[in-house]
Image (cartoon, rainbow, N blue to C red):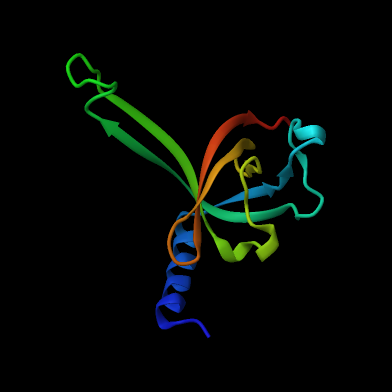
Length: 133
């Protein structure tokens, strides 16, 4: 039985997904023959998932090994936050899987998968272009 906190987090996640979420098509991938280019993974299902697309900006006042003469930098990392319950236990997202944003047909490769909070996963993504229809 889930804790009261977990039950409340489930309600919060559902409300956030309803308000801010958008639909992505999740396309599981695996390494190709001999470790080559990724190919579709037949052991995991293609499915629609709802996620919140965000961008995290990291700003630094110095870049380089020495502060004197260094330059400020700003790096933006886009990510998608998804409720883990949308995936079966053996079908969780992994590096190299693909997410296609339904509204725009933009393709994203999963670069990193990190736990976010109770029941969610934060997925760092890399834009790979758009799917042609």
